[in-house]
Amino acid sequence: MTPLMRLLLPDHVEVTEVRGELTAPPLFPEEAATVARSVGKRRREFATGRRCARLSLAALGCTATPLLPGPSGAPGWPAGVVGAISHCDGYRVAAVAHDRDLAGLGIDAEPAGPLPAGVLDAVSLPGERADLARLTSAVPHVPWDRLLFSAKEAVYKVWFPLTGKPLGFEDARLRFTREPGAAGLEHGTFSVRLLVPLPPELIRAADGGAVDLTGRWLAAEGLVLTALTLPAAGSGSGRPA
Image 1 (cartoon, one colour):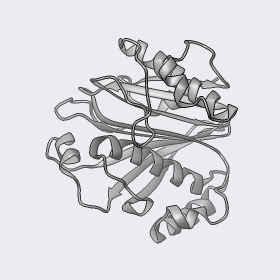
Image 2 (image 1 turned 180 degrees about the vertical axis):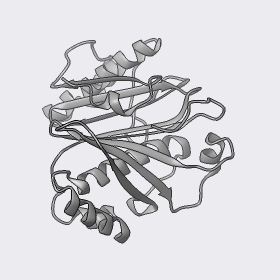
Image 3 (image 1 turned 90 degrees about the vertical axis):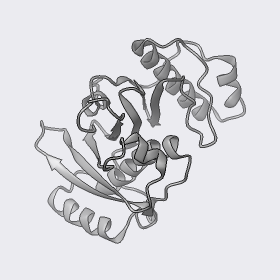
């Protein structure tokens, strides 16, 4: 398969993405226990997501440890590591980086189809809906509503590990830019303006400077993917991905 999420992230982020399921490496017993009562679909996506994460961590030079869900459901990463896992039908991905390089890392994968009726109004601001109407008129083959949902999921995955606080869909204003791409591959960037007071944890992560979040998106091969990174203070990692 084409390594699509790899295209969206900096080189110092280790990414493992697969179509279908992985059967190795084995889960730790503690991991398997967390989904023992879940339906088969959930057990499979959990297992392959953890296996992708373990492969990414190995590439980063980390020793394998159980990745148990925290209070938000996100995996608890080893000390010194930031990361994220995402999955949708037929696709699993995990990305990790050293926290000396990134203070935050968010990824999301969605099927490239429209959101169910009524969902867009629940996850968007009026200005975002106006933007999406213009984008849909200009580029109708991109599911812009699904892309907005995915990008807000990526924003949350950066926000929550740093702050431990909830962030509503209405608490961030997103804008999308489309860039020229190869046939069959749509991609671009999205900017994020947070509409809530910035907590000290996020200001410290930005080294006291402006928190200017810019992510990247891609739509190809039946998928919508988004990625957002926040460089660590003093890392010299350059612009966010």
